Every structure is written in structure tokens, then in C-alpha cells.
Length: 219
Image (cartoon, rainbow, N blue to C red; front, top):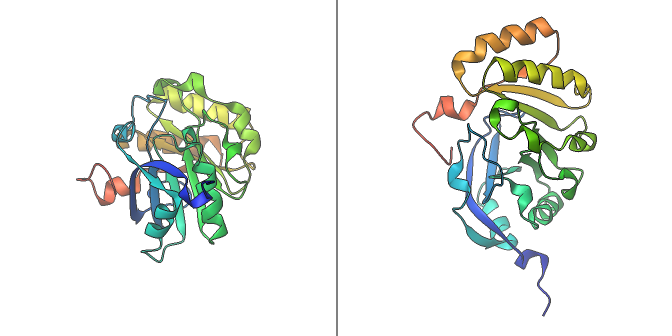
């Protein structure tokens, strides 16, 4: 007997309802669906627990769980959600049910495997992340005005690299662009650099860590 779409499975690390702390959608209520597994090892990673922890759930079970709150914003995240083949299928099912669907991806996998209507929030890994060599720059051609490229900045070298990349890949006008520091103390330096550049880059810090500093998962 053929397996229906809703019987197909994903390995899920956690599902929780919270405030979106990053991207141009920061501050809005969201469902977070965190998928297990990641092939990247960024030195600043704050979700290492998602590398291996998780259990298989059917798409039907996931969709039923999401109906327990009147929230129509969904973020598929990880880990790296695009490592799992059925991630795109879950996105299709969510869109068909009227959800606004976003995906947070490290930028090393082909983002075209999810429907075009999905809001793609894609990292370009900076040199100090240790994963810059994995960037798939062809993914930028799949982005449009609803999508976002995020740069996680560890220091001056990353900041200069990121400012150069924004212009080299003509990101302004293509999509939203945000810079986020790993150290809050670096915010003033980044702010000055953005103001000097004259570029409409969004400077952000992870809002959820300001609201719930004592928590380390499921914000």
C-alpha cells in the first residue's frame, strides 16, 4: 500500500510556540519546527543539541500539533532542515493550509527544493564561522524581495567580508539583508560601519536571548 503524503516522516528535534527573535519578521508570534541534523559545524553554533537529538514524526502528526495554537506563522529550522527530503513536502502541506512558511537554512544546500512561496532566510557563512567554504552562491539567484540573507559576524574581519559581499552580490534590492553579531559588545562597531556604508542593512541581535536569557532552547 502506498504511503500517503501525511504518513511520510521527518526527524524532529522540537516544536514550540514563541516570539521570532531574528530576521525582518522579528517580534512576531511563530511556531518553530526544528529538524534534527546538520552537516555544518559553525564555531558559534547555539543549537548543537539539534545535531542528533530527535524522533521521527509523521507530517500528519506535525500538522495536528500546529493546530493547537491560533498562529499561522511557521519557521522550519534546524540544524539544517534541507538535509531531510520531506522538508519541502511539509512546506507544501503548510502552504496549502494557509500558513506563512519560512525556512532558516545555512546556505550550503539547494534552496530550490522548497516551494517558491516559502520565505527563505539564508546565511552566508562568514570566514570566522569555519564554514565559509560551503556557501552555495548560486542560491542567491533563487531569492527575491520576500527573502533574506543573514550574516553572522564574529569580528572585524567578518564585518568587512560581509559588507563586501553585500555589494559584490548586489543583495540590496534583491532581498532583505541583516547583520547579527555573536557578541553584543560588537553592536556599536557594526552600527557605525553600517551607517558609514550608507547601505540599508538591518542590524539585529537575537531578541529571544534578551527576553529569556536563562533559556538555552525552546525560546
